[in-house]
Amino acid sequence: MKRIDLNCDMGESYGAWKMGADEEIMPLITSANIAAGFHAGDPATIRRTVRGAVEHGVAIGAHPSLPDLAGFGRRVMQVSPQEVYDLVLYQAGAVEAFARAAGGRLHHIKCHGALYNMSAMNDELSDAIARAVKDIGGGVQLYALSNSRMVDAGKRHGLTTVGEVFADRGYMDDGTLAPRGQPGGMIEDAAQSVAQVMSMIDDGVVVSLSGKRVPVSPGTLCLHGDQPGAVAFARALREAFSAREISVAAP
Image 1 (cartoon, one colour):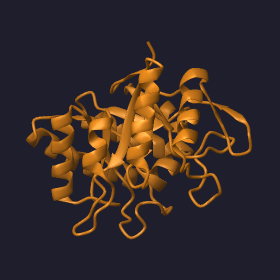
Image 2 (tube, helix red, strand yellow; image 1 turned 45 degrees about the vertical axis):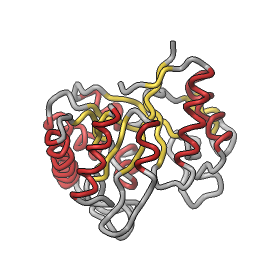
Image 3 (cartoon, helix red, strand yellow; image 1 turned 90 degrees about the vertical axis):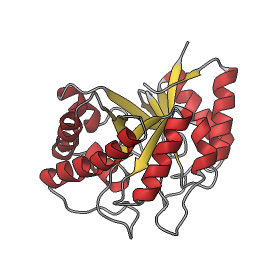
C-alpha cells in the first residue's frame, strides 16, 4: 500500500490577527508545521497549536523563518549560513519546549517561505539548516523540497530527510515552486490539486507550468494553512486517498 504524509503550515495567527482555520484542518492532517514567531505565530498560538496536534495525534514540526513579520517571511534577505543556523535552532527550540510541555515531542523541522526557497538552491544555507536539525538531536527529521540541495545536505548529515511536494502550488521546470504572483503559481481548484498530487504519488512526476514533466520524490505533501481553500483541499485529498487505498501517516 502506498503511503503519504499530509502536512500543513499553520499556527500563523499573531496577537489579535487570525490566520487560517487550524481547528478545522488539524483532524485532517498527519504533520503540522508550526510557525515559531519570526514570520507569524506568538507564544500563545504556538501553545494552542501544539496542544491541538497532541490531541489529534499529529506530528509536531517547527516552521522557522527569516525574521520578517511584516513580509510574512516571504521576502528574500541577505543572511549568512551562521545566521541561518542560529535562526533555525532558536525557533525550533521554542516549538520543542511547548511540545515537551504538552506531553509531545518535536518530530520535524521545515523552513518557511523565502528561507525554504533560498536554501533549496544554496548548498551553504542548506548545510546550515541540516546542522541545526542535527544539533537539536532526538531524531528530529528534516522536511525539504523534493530533489533539492536541502535534501542532499540532510542526507550528508545523516538526518532522516523527507522530500516534500506541494498540493496547492505550481512548479517551475527546475522543480522549484513557481512565484505566488505568477499565473498558475497558486492552485485554487481542489480537483486540479488532487490531479497534481496523484501524478506525483503514482508516477513520480509533476507537470510544470510550461508543461514539462519534472521528477519528484513525494514523502510528505504540503498544504498552506493560510490559503482560503485549505480545508476543502484537505478533505478532497483525504477522499481521493481513501478511494485509492493510499494510507496517510507521518514518516
